[in-house]
Image (tube, rainbow, N blue to C red; front, side):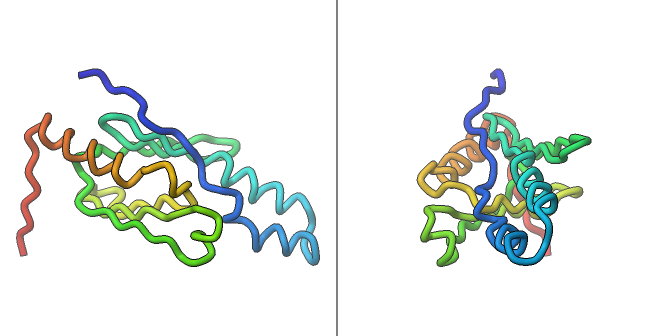
Length: 135
C-alpha cells in the first residue's frame, strides 16, 4: 500500500495574538514577524501511515511519527479557541523520542480527530500491531 497524503495544515496565527498585541504597544515589529514566521513554518502533514511535522525558519527539521504508535488522543477546545472554530489535539504515543505530540490551533471543522482515528486503526490492522500495557 502506497503512502498518500490525507491532510496538510498549519496552526492558526491566532496563537500569536498576545505577541501581536505586545508589538503594537511595547515591542518592535520584527519580533512579531518572527513569531508569525515560527507558526507559519510549522507544517503538519497527515499521511495514510505517518504524521510529519516540519518546523524551522532558516533550518528545517522534519519529525516523523508512525500512526500505529499513537496510543491515545485527546481533543480540547478551550473557550478562546472555540470562539474561532479551533481545537487542540494531544497525541500520547509509544514513541521513545516523542512521547507526547501537541497539535494546537487547528481548524475544528476539518474532522481531524476522526481522520486520525480511522487511519490509526487501519495502520494497526495492516501492520498487525497490538498495544500491550504492562504495569
